[in-house]
Length: 400
Image 1 (spheres, helix red, strand yellow):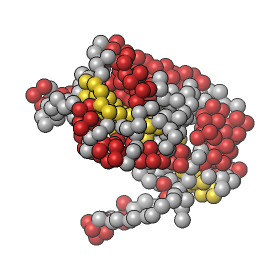
Image 2 (cartoon, rainbow, N blue to C red):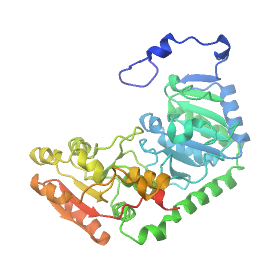
Image 3 (cartoon, helix red, strand yellow):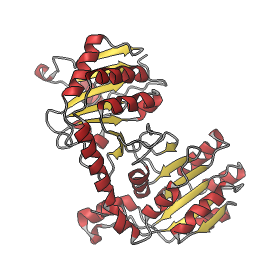
């Protein structure tokens, strides 16, 4: 009914259903929102929205999966260009920027940290994204008091989810962004140029801190860098795992984050990699499929390799083998030191040998320079290829 396809399930916990509250705590007003239907915004509401954008000093666009599903990517970029506003995407959402663009600064909400953008923004344009832990629930200290929020979504029910917006627009996303792009263009907004440049510099500086430390030892950094050169528009990339997922998002999504990169989603579920690669091969039989997985995640469904062989579903799987539940171990170490690392160490497992036992191809690689060549060869193999890469358990979080 509201524009989001698929079934709807509503659960109300019993304690909430039976709870009694003071009448004074019930909101006595509703945020100013509008349902534009096909995107035909009333001129006065369009002008009001454009005015809020113009009056801001440090605006930030947070573009989530809803922009992808609403096919609003290109119109969003045009709006960003006209208003000179940086764009970020919540980590693990479907990508919306399929080509490198200077206004796109990667992901927000990563456990490994991020440049200070959300905290300093005085206007957040939340487009097709949910209010959740990845953006600090849009509450202090993650955002400043008084930060304005413009909510844009194709689902009118999302406009008041988690936060009361300053303005809310529900409608066809390409149409809405096209109208806003024209409205800000008509106003000749140029005041945001300094903030955009500052945001770009902050982003570049934040990521440069990994360069020297990460290169001093074989880590997830090397795996992602080897993969990066192969990611043309044909490759279907799956990312499964905590630390390797952080490395992938921190390095790959800085320039582009296309929807053909498939992840575990906001809930952080791990173990999807092998079944996901099989499904991707079935859905895209003529495209190369590449899985980048942590060793812990890979262990969830390792025996599905036999299913992939039996069903003749080839793909390439890279296992970042640090013998650790890396993201959990990093948090334990930073909170409690070495003695606090409990139940997060894994054994020395040769995943390439497991692959061979299942009828797939397996190889172990110690030199990052060999990895790119091995991946290319794997794409032409008639069976799944598992590349085991022993690495140091180093997370982006560990480099400060």
